[in-house]
Amino acid sequence: MRIRIIGTGVMGRGIAQWAATAGHTVELADARPEAVGEAIGFVGDMFGRAVQKGRMSGAEAEAALDRLVPLDSVAARGDEVELVIEAVREDLDTKAELFASLERALPPTTMFATNTSSLPVTRIAATLADPARLAGLHFFNPVPLMKIVEVVPGAATRPDIPVTLAELVRASGHRAVVVADTPGFLVNHAGRGLVTEALALLEDSVAAPAEIDRIARDVLGLRMGPFELMDLTGLDVTAAVIDSIWAGFRHSDRLRPSFLTPNRVAAGLFGRKTGQGFYDHRPGAEPPSEPPVTGDAARPVWIAGTGPDADALRAALPQAVREPGSRAVVLVATWGAAVSAAVAAHRLPAERTVGVDPLSLSTRRPVLAATPASDPVAVADARAVLASGSGAVSVVRDTHGSVAQRLLASIVSVAASIAERSLATPADIDLAVATALGYPTGPLAWGDRVGTRRLLELQTRLHDGTGDPRYRPTRWLRERAELGLPLTTPAYPLESQP
Image (cartoon, rainbow, N blue to C red; front, side, top):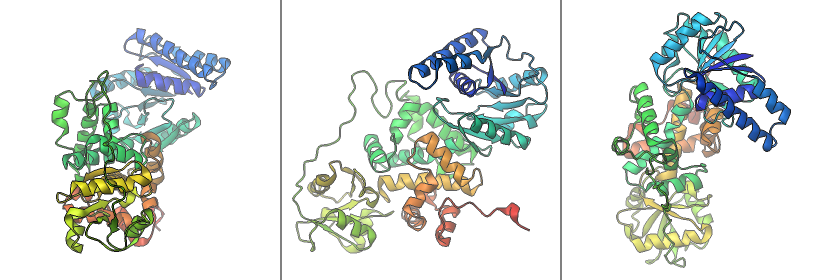
């Protein structure tokens, strides 16, 4: 295929490298003609590195480089061009002007694609004389390594174009998912589940950013904690995406932004690119250290309650005493509920009772929850007892669901709401999110690991206990829990009705 890529910044260069490597002839154009030569030189260097690493042969790299064709004008005539991929700045007027010139220069059979990540594809297409020829083709940076592409048909896009683009992407070594033209498309929308809930936990003073990140990595298995991620991408960018998606979905409670971000953005606390964010990235700055374990690991512990969570805690601590002596630390496993509620319900000694997140028991980081009544010595001793088996134990403030439960519930809820609206299929949601965001598995499959009924119990308790509509269980989850189906089960196919 002959593809014209317009815009030779980071994304344009990456797309050009991907397309040329896959065997396509790639025309490169930019508003600054000198930028085209720079881009070709950059891509050539990338091919050279691939040869050094054994990923390409010298002949393959030379052939791929020969497939890059520089253009002096973005609107050069091109009767053989089958596809144009636009990767210019995120401005509707700029894109509209570009596509107007392309409509005059290229035949009606040429497909148009925009790599926009924030503008509605339908709005861009509406500026064309023929809006049916344009769709979204959203790549992720770095393009050669992020092997997932969102294909986004606009409201007027011809039905054959998304099919053709998806086939092109797959034949060229990446995975393609077809998603609806909605705010954030699929991946950016789904990613709000993690960061908005992390900010909500910080609002509630449940734990510091570093502790939340440790729990996200060690309990949930994320490659990077949410605050590390926001510092990497830049809080200015993250806050703008959160606000635009929330506004686009008419102020959905599930996507509600945090009051913490505007002042941090105004102060320039963007993260790595400004030197300070949730972490200090200035030269010589030390990362936050984890508090040492100082308690009495030999202190007796007694496990309160019955049921699977209490049984799992007893299995993890076989040394637990059978009777609640006057000195024993009382451990209570909480699922979607607060430790304070367990203290009140079972008349436990408040000063010696500490919560344990059952989601963390089988991981390398058990998580304890302390209430305002908890004796600091009892909490330190409980930490020492659990640290003897794992080495790392986090202590957070008591909240409904604890840190990992709230993060996971939000990740799954946002993904379930995407499926519920038919914005993408369950399989595509899991594929795109796991690939683009580096989650250990797709969010719906992740919920299935926990179990739909157990997850419904978690979300119901979060909603009932806090009264916050952000935790309201989705119809997608409730329906599948009631039917005994996994979250990955697609909706009933209406088109098959007689």
